[in-house]
Length: 298
Ligand SMILES: NC(=O)c1ccc[n+]([C@@H]2O[C@H](COP(=O)([O-])OP(=O)(O)OC[C@H]3O[C@@H](n4cnc5c(N)ncnc54)[C@H](OP(=O)(O)O)[C@@H]3O)[C@@H](O)[C@H]2O)c1
Image 1 (cartoon, rainbow, N blue to C red):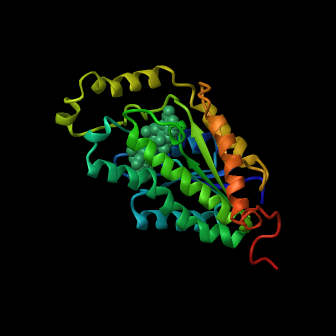
Image 2: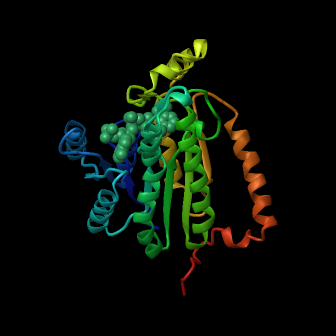
C-alpha cells in the first residue's frame, strides 16, 4: 500500500471527523471529508473546510454523505473512487448520543440512533468493501467509545449502539483478515467536541418524572463527562498513528482517553477469551491476517 492513503470519513462537519480530516491531510493523505447536507445546513462547515484546504494546499475534498441513506452512501463512495481511484481507509465516525433513562427513550428515538450509530457503518462498509477487496487491502475504522465497553446509566441506548458496533467490527476483523483488510475499533473517552450540545434527550418526560432522585443521573453524568473532557486532537493523533501502522500490525481496539477507566483491562481479557473461542471452534487459521497472500490472489 502506498504510504499516502485515500481516506473517507463520515460525519466530518464538526468534532472528531473534522479534526481527523485536517490532521490526516496535513500528513499528505487524501481525505474525502463527508457530511450531511453540505449545500444547506452544513454549508458554513463545508465552506470553512474547503477554504482551509485551498489556503493550506491540503488534499481534502468535501462530499455529501448521510449514513442513514443507502443511495447517499453509494454516491459518495462512487465519487471518491472516481476521483482518487481507490479507498484505503473508511472512518465510520458519524454518530450522536441519546441521553436519558432507558424507559423514557421512545422506540422511534432508539431506532433512529441505531440507524446512525450502527447501521450507518453497515452501509458504509458494504459500499467500500468491494473496492478494498479489489485492491486486496484496506482499513475499516469504527469510532466506538469507552461506552462501547462499559455501561453508564442514562446512556443505555448509546452504549447499546456502540456495543452493537463493536460486535460487528470484531466480526469484520475475523472475516476480512484473510483478504488483507483490517477492521479496527477506536474507543475514545470523553473529549471536547460539539457532541454534548448535539445530545438528544429522552422524549418521554412523564416517565422520567416518576424516577425520583434517579432522574437527576443524566444531568449529573453529562456534567461529569463534559467537565472531564480532553483535547480532541489526541484522538486525531491516534487515528493518524493507526492508519500509518503497517498493514497486518494494527490492533483490533484502541482505547484513547483522558482518564484511565480500566477499559484496556477488558480489552486485554477479551482478546484472550476470543482467541480461546476461535481456537475451540477450529477457526484460528481462517481468521489470521495473511500478509501479501490475500484470498483469491495468484
Ligand atoms: N466527543 C466525545 O467525547 C466522544 C467520545 C466517544 C465517542 N465519540 C464518538 O465520536 C463520533 C464523533 O462525535 P464528535 O464527538 O465529533 O461529535 P460531533 O461534533 O457532534 O460530530 C458528530 C458528527 O456525526 C454527524 N452525523 C450525525 N448523524 C449523521 C448522519 N445521519 N449522516 C452523516 N453524519 C451524521 C454529525 O453531522 P451533522 O453536522 O450533519 O449533524 C457530525 O458531523 C461519534 O460517533 C461519537 O459517538 C465521541
